[in-house]
Image (cartoon, rainbow, N blue to C red; front, side, top):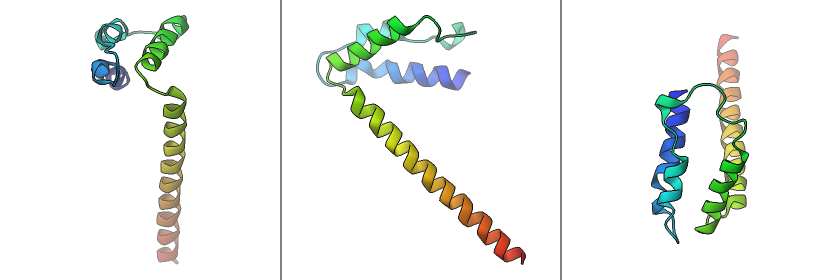
Length: 97
């Protein structure tokens, strides 16, 4: 759990480095303190999440592009890893024959 919350804190931390209007104060409101995280941190936070999305769009972040890029790159990396796994298994099976 610490790694996930650490990533969220890290991801929101440098918000004032984004192009356009600074949103440092907005980012501070959404910073997650990993010492205070326990239980369900998602239920009931839709409005807060929308505020984050809106703040990112105000400073010029194209979230649709971000989501499509993340999905495309994730699929590409998975396919590459899957192919490497299949090649490794095939090689080991061929060597065992």
